[in-house]
Image 1 (cartoon, rainbow, N blue to C red):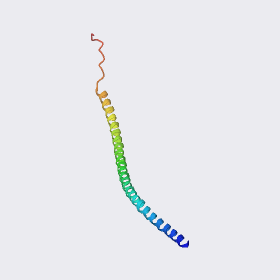
Image 2: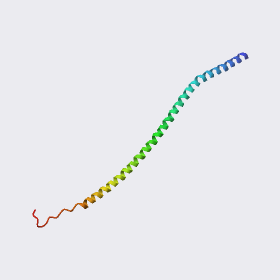
Image 3: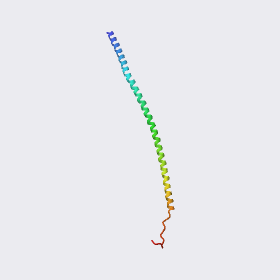
Length: 107
C-alpha cells in the first residue's frame, strides 16, 4: 500500500512536472511572440510620437511666421494710409479754388 502511494505520488509529481514543462513551452512561445509584437508596436508608437512633436514644432514656426507677416502687413497698411492722407492734403492745397464770376461778365 505504501509502495502504491509512493508510486502514485511519484507519478503525480512527474505528470505535474511534464505538464508544467509543456505548458511553459506552449505559453512561452506565445508570450515571446506577444512580446516581440509589443516591442514593434512600442517602436511604432515612439516613431509616431516623434513625428507628431516634429510637426507640432513646424506648426508653431509657421504660426509665428504668419503672425510676424500680419504685424508687418498691418504696419505697412498704416504707413500707406498715412501717405494717402498726406497726398490728399497736398492735392487739396495745390488745387486752386474755383474762380468767382466777375460782376461785369455776361453769362
